[in-house]
Length: 352
Image (tube, rainbow, N blue to C red; front, top):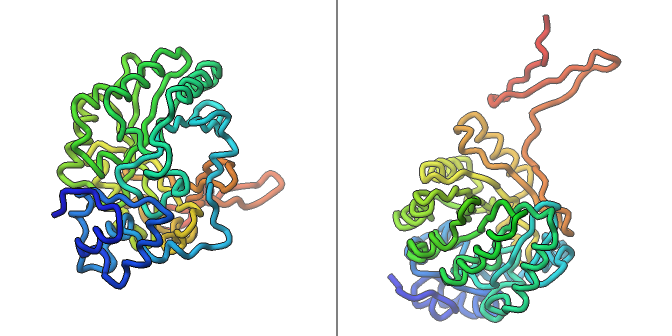
């Protein structure tokens, strides 16, 4: 097992994660999009399986060079809602604070793939961070601040503690949420000092962990998540529906149950965004709706994420799960018909 993060085609080839015949194409991909595959995740890949779901998420593929007309450099419209550097204010009561453009691992489907990577600024400058914090201070409607990037947990405990203390001192900010892959990609980073750094006094810190396959929840990753949960930090999970990774009822069910067993509440199941070079990883919405319908009733309510689509152009997320209700009748006799998890339909209220 390699002890270093793999960052180029030669290193990937040396570890037998790509074939020598793929090297030139992967070099072209790496020249455009960031590559980083840490040892923890590299060790999970079965190099003999050409359809390995871990490799499909993190190992560059020549298909990333194929761009579709509908794909966008900023597929969820961050730029349209960025009043100052580092801030995205799309919804009235919450903002994103993008502290860094660096990640512990670079997902091949990332919707910010044109904005993140080692060739981008590593973190907000002190001046830009001050301006971002001033924006939050002067907008009293901001109830929640979401730390994202990049991945905020690649930053030092010292830097995170300083930012958290600034946010904790803003009276109208009641909740801080952190979006991260680090507990999965580099679980050793979730050390006691870092856990203490992100925990606020008197205000909740939520951590949303990005997980797409149950195999990512290694013993080390579970221990990292447990360190946060044991400290009183509520954990959520964000999952992206990906072709060839988790687009089956069995794989999704195993993931959602494993998350709940780790004290992580499934939060969102994202329909994959229209990021450049990601068509090979996207499913269609009908497939996603069918999968969510199959999970309903067969898995505990604790295991049910909300299937959402981030509408291109910066219009926000909307739930796109299956519909279980239809209306019938008119002129005062309107009733509804509700479908149960077995596909049977029932009038409501029931006939007398």
